[in-house]
Length: 250
Ligand code: SAM
Image (cartoon, rainbow, N blue to C red; front, side, top):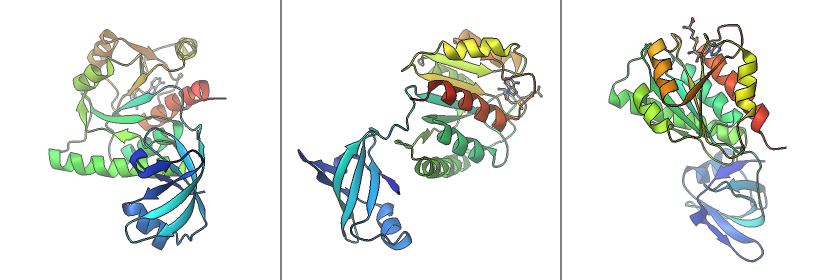
């Protein structure tokens, strides 16, 4: 079933049922690309994660109106919010990481310039990239039936990222020189439901020792992801996969 993202202001709930309207670029997508018809059933999710099983009742150029059949909890969100602080890698790797991070349950992705980041982007190019990455996040959210569209933030420096992350409950930094996967298991199993998490993964060149020390001073826990050196994208997918395995709802 197709899923569309709406704002709660577009929903008119009644005691039983109600209606909602879909506006913006989804109108063209539903009418002309998917060629959907009156009577077809879709799922719409608002910004709070509430989902509405709905039947299309009419079309106009500006909106698609639907009758709400059922309000439900899509159960696609983890009980913990996860922000991935992604040390900015080269070429199209950010796209891959963002797509997989959204599929695995991350709520926010922050591209971070670190000491060993190679990519250089001026402000204009950085904003264009961010918009492209946000579109990747939106497509991945639709495909994986997420109840929210994870945000891709503007590029931050490592220091800015630490300053914002210090308010999160748990900070993890996978570090290839950390030893002992049993420590990783313990740290991850100690995470309580509802805690907010920040995960820092380095770019191709990894984090410098100074960056690791800074992160630890901000409360980050260094963890191992095994005895092999993983590529940045593999490390992101691995740590988020482990978190999803431990934290997903039954
Ligand atoms: N430059 C490093 C080297 O060759 O030793 C490798 C950096 S790795 C490609 C990129 C990032 O993935 C690292 O900064 C770290 O966050 C993560 N990473 C890779 N392998 C890891 C492992 N075995 N344990 C924990 N983190 C790992």
